[in-house]
Image: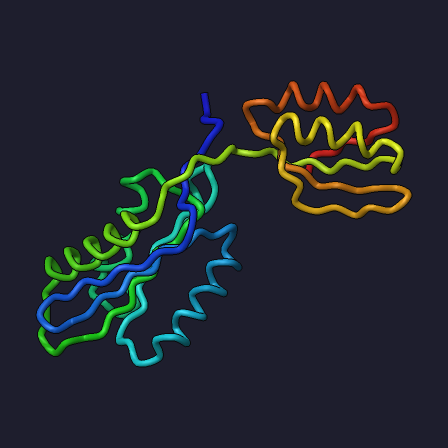
Length: 200
């Protein structure tokens, strides 16, 4: 039985950790997809152009297959994997943690690096609330404008999210139906005469 919910963070957070002169700054932020991550990652690189390393870990989606980590020049497995490990230990998804490192002149060794990246990632994740969100199944609704009230009643009653809409004489609305209520919502939508429902 796959879950009906997933856990993520509510808003961005940051934390700092110092070890023997090196400074590690972690930024945790929610993301919707890889493009979202790349945009925010680029902004952080521009904000910290003099940093020696920009390491990260992220996980997206609920099937467990969309994740990535990067050591960005640190010894293999000493940065990205410990960061991703903190996301996974809290069973979170749809978020990224980027850690910016300013080298302090003293080598920390692999155990020291693993500890620093793990610690600062944990600190950042501790400073932002974890929220539970519905896993949603996406559908496109197409209907005549006169059916708007009936459609919105179902959408609101079952906490569906509207992701996109075009309201003219003939309307198009993209919605996410909470997985837990999926069959019931489809049943209710199919009761509306003239409403076209397609999965996207």
